[in-house]
Image 1 (tube, rainbow, N blue to C red):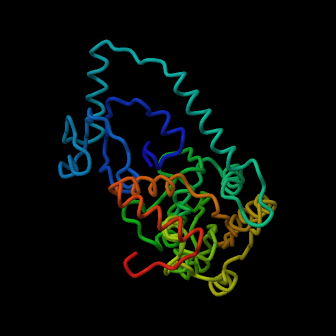
Image 2 (cartoon, rainbow, N blue to C red):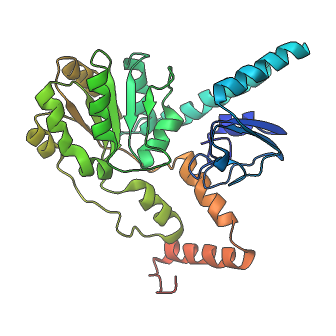
Image 3 (tube, rainbow, N blue to C red):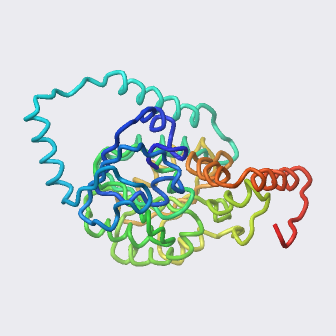
Length: 335
């Protein structure tokens, strides 16, 4: 999520004091900038093959219409010709490494005996997946937690519908990836709401003997929208799903069903799922996820949007939120 308020601490601190930014092949879209909250320096050099993206969301000091690879090759040649030598960045590398380790440690230092801590889940999954495994996500809270907590070791091996944000993408996309890469581990991470939209497509995986794993983050809500509502409004309007019988869906589609109830089961369930998938059977893993800690993305977007209110409206908004959280007062029609 760029390096603004919605990014992880390592990204925020690495870009502190950035006075010139070269942006290549991007649109500065809403999600990537955390609701346009990313602080872009005045000296922005924007390179893209599509001139329509220039100066839409952030003004560019220099806009270059070009193919990304050609532009970067030309820039590299110009730097070589100038005689400039790369500056060692060991201090910056050490900062990024330290902040990443601290962030992951804050997520994994305590075990949850009631539900599954996202930090523990991603740690156990990453340690058991091959470096070239493919991970496919959907649109939702799990998407941002994956981006923040799951290390990706090879380019193009994390597949996401980001920017179009179409819920229901993950299951059919995972099947497609496994069809085209039958010799690779292919794992889906999907929220329960998104899974309900296309989960029955797993019957195709069963029929074709595709050993993909579908980790369903099951919390009974449309978590991302639910959190955006709950934080300021203390209510969850049209976001509560209730209990979903994922085992029934596994039976209906011919998939193996496994349940991960807490952190103590995370390692063994991941191992079992990988073993079952290696034998050519799709696996649905019912992950009883704990969403009590908000992602950096969620916290950042709430702060950014609150900060846009004029002072009087901001205080009115905060006052309502405090009243609803402390007193449980219902909102009026004007709220």
